[in-house]
Length: 359
Image (cartoon, rainbow, N blue to C red):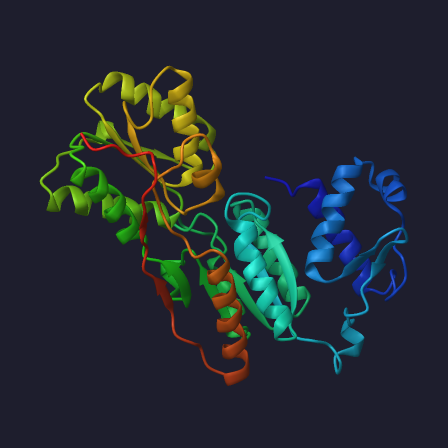
């Protein structure tokens, strides 16, 4: 998978800033010129600029233009340079990720640290590129959301090298188990358990479970699902567990509907997250089914999708912005104290809304 066009442009502009081709407090070329230079749409240029504004390299002045921010210090002025924390997430602009990033950014700014942000799109090659960039920019610490954390990662050697360089690092949402790394995560086994148990306590004995199998969260949520079924003497089969990956996400709702049609005894559905739960609920409604009268659905993460759709989803909470702030505090304390802080494991809670009915 190649990098997005806006990421390529953002990297190039960032390199020009670091090399002083674009100087502090001077305007960069206008958007129309950048469109011509890179042969892209205005929207793509604006995405690149927004990323660099978020990272602290640029600032926009209404009616004037976009400038290299005076807070930025080049490597040649390291005596005055504020410490920079690299943040690598799987995604930037959708689902719960903006809230996590906002929490990190707010806390770093409050403590006088700058932010260097990158996204992997849950792709190993992009992750490698992001990590190499972080080394090039001499970041003082790293906050990482792992890429496909439930699979072998060819970049593990890069992470070992980062550790050998003495760069403090904490992982959020999941962790590469092979590295024995520090982490800030939700107890996903408990999340899966609570979602499943709630359906069982509402007399749903025939369950469908949908989970993402290339990320560790999906593996742990499946473990919680199985644990709840065993404790409550509920049987399940391989036919009623549906797995998907980053690449097959768009196909999983259709798979789930096929499964439901073949297994007409199913009444309760546990979904990996609110994104899948919301899509499935909408698709079932379009087919003439009623949620929760025909099917009860539980999501996960308490995203905006669970609260603002036509069907308010029962879900599990995710700390989002709090996680971001805690991750920023973790990395700052580790840098300033010279030793790793404690791992953080959040205890999930069930949020009951309208998508589950007792039968």
